Length: 270
Image (cartoon, rainbow, N blue to C red):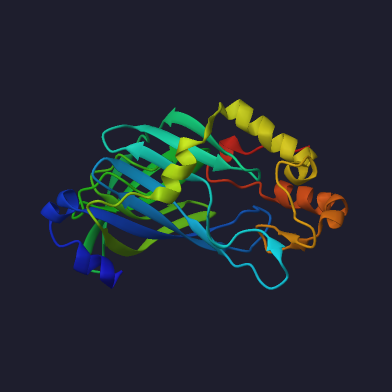
């Protein structure tokens, strides 16, 4: 947080330079579990766009794994700075990213409650979004109407955000300057080859994946070279011969993720 304070020294800085805010997100992927998952998400505010994404780090070892090396990009969001239309890019296990375009506006109620954190004056606001009740603490000292995920529209940057049941909790932990000519090639590489779908079509793709968790390997869209193995997102390592017996466990893992940020969009698995 101290790094944040050194960088954000004046209103002119906010609008003349690109900046990245890093949020720590703590969440329950499984609503029946007490286990909290921690991930860092990036909110990049550049001249034209606002992007929200994370990068998960994967390392291949000496086993000869067919998986991810260095950073793997997961699902992400992008919108134009002067627009409320979000482009949501979803990765669900195959080689493609799927894109959903939707307008997102929260109806905020700004409260009188004030607190001071790291010399910033924060004000409370509440809203209902995605089937949850949310509390945000924003700062007019940083006059950017953005926040983590799809949260936007307050008269200051959202510094802290959580739902009242504390299933999701976001806190800014750092900020960084971004070069004026910065362009995230990793994001735009996937944008250029994404497939536009509706929410219903995306839900159907997720249900198809539940029915056949390794279909992209078994039908040849993804290949495992001879002698190599598949590295799954959770670190599980499987040979091609082990895929079929592992399907039941993959369905269990998919079904356990029953607690997305937008709870009203949770897929109803059989």
